[in-house]
Length: 577
Image (tube, rainbow, N blue to C red; front, side):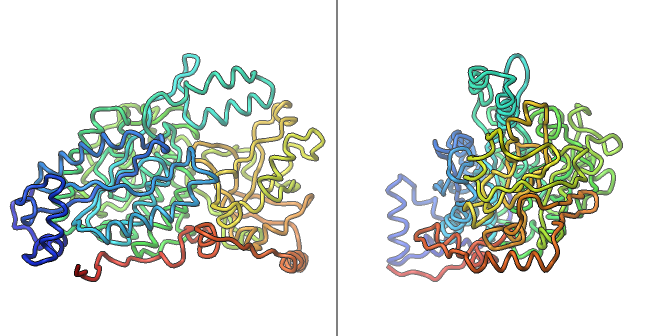
C-alpha cells in the first residue's frame, strides 16, 4: 500500500460526519460487527459478485470473493460484497444478451448509489464481463476486474475436448448418423469437469483476454484455470491493488482510451477471439466516451492468429496458460510493433512494461508472427446492399474454400421456421446454397441469441458436407465454428435489407474484399421492403422486454440501450434521513 496520505474518500460523505446521517449510516453498518475505527478514512471497496448457482461458470465466485476481501483488508481497505444480476449464457433463455444491459444498469446504480470508493468486478460467463464493465465505466470509480477463470480441459475417450465446441462437433456427427444417441449423450459429463468458464477461446475467454489487453485486470487474469491456486493469489493481489488505485485515483477513463481499444481489437485477432467481442467492446467504449466504430475492426484484420486454441485451432485454455498465457501473446505482438506500448493498466504500469519479459513455453500453442496459425486472423467487417451498416465474419473459424462464394439463398424467416424445416429431407438445398436466417437480431428473437451458426441439414451432413455459408442478424457462440456471417445490420426486424431476401436470390460473399452483396436491383429491393413495411406488425408488449425492443441499439452500435450510452460519473445528490 502507498505511504502517502489518503485523499478525501467518497465514502466519507456517508460515514465521515458527526451528525444524524453519519450516526445512522455507521450504526446500520455496525450491526454486522464492524468496529468503529474501520470508518476512519479507510477506503470502502465494493465487490460486485455475479455468483449464482444458475450461472455454473460463476458458481465458485464466492471463494474468489473471499480472497479478494483478504487482499483488501491487508492493504487497509474495507471490503463490502454485494450481488448484481448474473446472466449466464448456459441457462438463460432466450439469450443472456437480452439481459446484458439490465445487468449493466444494476451494476451502475449499485456502484453509484452506495458508499464505495472503488470496485472489484467478479465476472466469468461471457455476458457478465461486458455488463459489469459497462456499468462501472458509466460511474468511473477506480475499478479492477477479477475473472473466475476457465475450466480444466475436458476429457472424452482419452482426448482433450473443448466445452461448447464438443457439442457442435458431436451433434453434427449424430445428425450425420455417424454416432448413436447413446454415444452423443455419453459425452455430456466429459465436457465440463471443473468449475469455471468454457475452456475454449469462446466468448468468456475472449472477453477475459479483452479485459487484460485493455488494461483492466492484472497480468495473467485471463487464463489461470479456475481451480488453480494461482487464481486465488491473483484475486488476493487484485484486492490489494484496488486500494492503491483508490488512493491514486486511477479510474477507468484513464485506462480505457481509444488506443487501448485498438490494442484489444488486434489482440482479438491474435487469440482467434469471438465475434461477440465486436458488440461488447463497442458498448464498453460507448459508456466511457470513446468513439469506436465497426470499421475500427479493420485495424485487426491483418493481424495473424497466434493462439492455437479451439474452435480455430487444437488446444484449450489450460494449455494456453501453461504456454505463457496472454502476456506471451502480447510480448510477441509488441516485438513486431503491432500494439501501442503506452497504454496504461490497473497496476499503474503500461501494458508493454507488464509483458516485455514474458516467456512462451510452448510455441505450438502460442505461435509466432513469423509462423502463425492464420495469417489474417482478425474479424472481417463486410458491407454491401445486404448489410449497409455492416456484418462480421471470423475467418480463423471459417472454411478457406468458402471465403469467397456465390450461391442461392435458402431462407428461414425465423428460428422457429429453421427448426421446423431443417430436418426435412425434401428441403431444397445443396452444399452450394447459402442459408439465410432472419428476425434473430437485437429486436427480433429478441435479444440476438446465439443461433447464427445454424446446424446443417442432416441430408447434407450424411453426404459428408462439413460447412456451408450461413448469414443472419444473430450472434453465434464463441465456441462455434464455420463460415458464418453474423450481426447483419440493420436487422430484419427493423426492415433492413435482410428482411427482403427471398428463396433463390443469389448472394455473393467475398471475405477478402469485405463484400456481402444481394444480387437484386436497388429498385426491386426497395419494392420488397415497401411491401413488408405495409404489413409490418408493431409488437405490443410490457415489462422489460418491451423496454428492450423499444430502446436497444443495432449490432453495429453495440446493442446498448440508447439512454445508457455515456459516462454519468459517480456523483449522487446528498440524502438526508
